Amino acid sequence: MKSIQKQSLLVAVVVIFFTTPFFFASCKDETKSSVNFTYDKETVPTMSTDSMNALISDSGVISYRLVAKTCDVFDQAKDPYWLYPQGIYFEKFDSVFNVVFTVKADTAWNFTARKLWKLKGHVFVKNIVGETFTSDELFWNHQQQKIYSDKFVKIDRPDKGILQGKGGFVANQQMTEYEFKDVGESTSGKTIIYVNEEQENSEEKVE
Image (cartoon, rainbow, N blue to C red; front, top):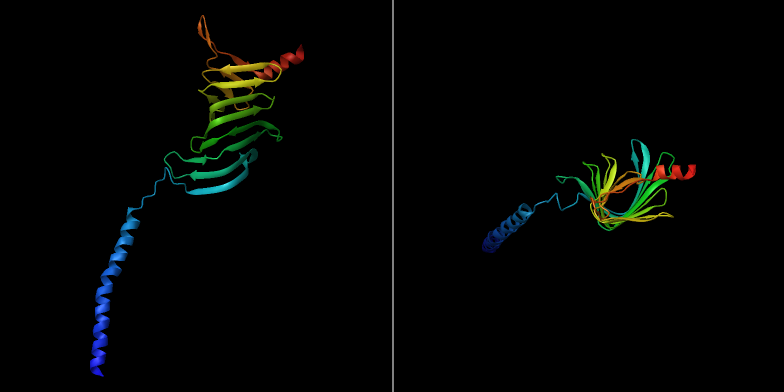
């Protein structure tokens, strides 16, 4: 009986002896794997969401409506931003909730610390007087209260024709007052056109 107990004990010791190194090796591999993992704040979002349809307030007043299929938040990045990789639709309201302008784009970045929007790919903007702006790239600087682009831009003005700027344009946040940086060459060099829709409309009413 004692002999059987000794044999059982010996077997148990042998089993423990040979399985323990594998256990520690497994733990070591797991530890090594976890240590090697690095979190890249610039490329890995801290939060992702689908089917966004949000009303956004500014100083306690609802000022914007934003619709997007997906949104990735990179708030730990060096330059924090929200990415809308599958397109965006955007509306801006005035104080009585009239739509001041609408925006569409294939991709959008909202750099939250700088209060700067970057819109890329088939950018389409429509202002309150019905003018449409199309370009491949557009920036909206909320701090400076201006919208601008260095890319080719086309503006379709109902009953007033089409304007095109090769070197982009700069506009106010309502997109009713804008200046083309370059619409072509003249004898004096590059031509710049300045448009103020509110002034034009008031002059037309007087006439």
